[in-house]
Every structure is written in structure tokens, then in C-alpha cells.
Length: 229
Image (cartoon, rainbow, N blue to C red; front, side, top):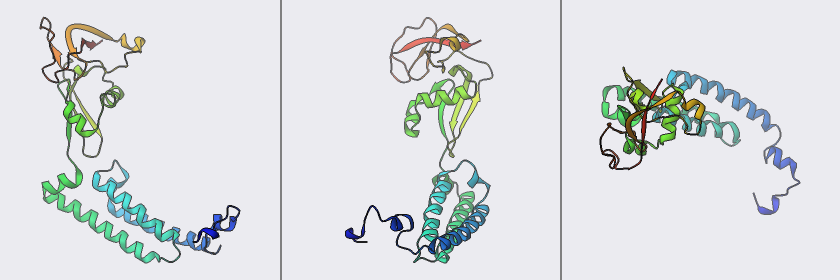
């Protein structure tokens, strides 16, 4: 389209573009066909496509959006080409999934790996940084599961699909509080202990030990460890 053909008052072009109004009916028919076919392909892709997506599945979903938009809206493109590409995408996804079942390295590359963010009440700051997870994101996840101090947690895993898995201690230990420091009413459920805990990573310094830089993260910021009543 040339510059001189663009006018703000040209509502025919703004609403319908350069295609004739009858193309709106064609768009409806194209969309209906592609939509039904897309539902069929998604059904064949498996139940995981409607759940929490892995890296491979997210790539497939983004690809599907790019495929179907052209077939529904572009008058000089037929829908058969997009339907063929959808079938190819189905074959690629199912093929990689089956290959991953037979080859652990392929599964690791296409699906991702599990990351351990917290071990025995102490955060792995290096791994959290690699995964792009902040302390507040981790604390928010723990609070949603009723964990109010890190001493209650044995492990926190970040699954390959992006979900958090929390394994609790069989017996609670003192730890770093996960509750917001400004909410005094809620903080009343916590009780200080004689141990000190690193605010940076959650590492415990036993009672009577000299408070020096943390042996885990080298920070020198301590607070009383707490337990939950």
C-alpha cells in the first residue's frame, strides 16, 4: 500500500482492509475449519498440552499460533498448507517425545532438568540465580504451602515444567522466616531461638558460635532463627 492511499477517515479500509467485505464470510469459514483441525491436532498431541508446559510443549504451542493465523486471515494463502504444517508439527512433537523415552540425553535437552533450590533449610543461591528465581518468589511459594520458616523444609525442587515441589522435614528445625517482616500479627506465630541464621541464604550458626561471615554465602547479615508454634 502506498502512503497516499492511507487516510484516517477511510473506515472501509480500517474495518475491512483491502479485501472485499465478502472475505469476512471466508474468514469465518477458514477459522472454523482451522479451529476444528487444531482441536484434533491438540488432542493427538496428548493431555500434557493442556497442563503445565515443558520447553518442548511451549515451543509447539507458539508454533501453532503462528501457523493458524496466516491460514485464517490471508486471502491469497490456502488453508491446506497450514494443515500440512500442523501435521508436521504433530509428527515432530510426538517423535521427539518417543525419542526422549529411549535416550536420556535427548529428554534432558528437550524437556529440561530439575533444579534443587533449597537443601535442609538452606537456599542454593547459585542455582536460584541460574534459574532466575528470587528469594521472594521462593518464599511466596513456600508460604502458599504453609511453610513459615526454612527449617520446615528438606528440599525444594524446581521441576522441568516450572512447578515447585516441596519436601518437608519430618521434624521441624529452626530456620529463616518466610513471612513478611512488616506483618507483626502473623509473625506472632514464630518464636525466636538462640541460634542465628543468615538472612542471605538461611544457613544456621549454632548457639555460642562466633558470628562471622556465613560459611555458605560469605554474607555477614544474621538474625535469630525461628520456629513455628
